Length: 224
Image 1: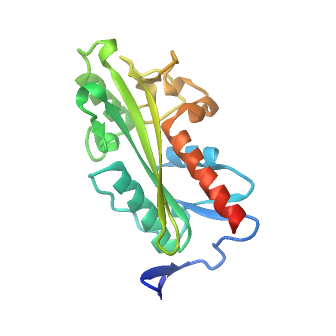
Image 2: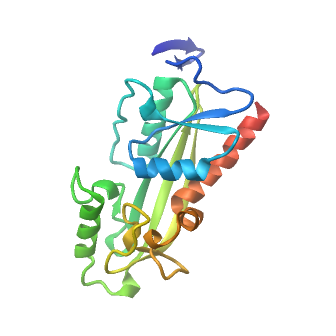
């Protein structure tokens, strides 16, 4: 990567000169190593005018060093890492499950609730153990997703999405990932993991945040 000073900012020259925006398509780097999330992001953002490129497809792409202070911070770290390495518009996201009776936990630690190398099943199992004696009416929770857009030149923008519901007593469904098998959205009797991908994306926190991002990108593309 080559860095060039542009005014008060330091901009990254793309490692791949052909990896840039053109009149027909807006090229966007997706900064995630989670294949389940990458698939979902691709499904939601898919559009004829938008070209989505996984950050992992760039040779030598570094792993973003996430913090532990907030979802916003982590999303920005992911987006900035990809933007600074490729010189392209990049997005990153972070999601947390916030349980009312646990004062918002696991929150920013959701993906590592049962440990740094915990699996989806490990995290769900720990959460259900913690809530074992908690009745249905006290199991309210929400998903919060923060999507960060980092643009060449330094501009950044955050998009947020929420999904409210409650936690059931055992995992149900095979279509989702993370805490989806134990989260029932308000107004539904099924967990997110029991819903079709299209319905889940319509209701989910990530779907809402990404659709806001998509509207913003469309305006940018039309104005370019």
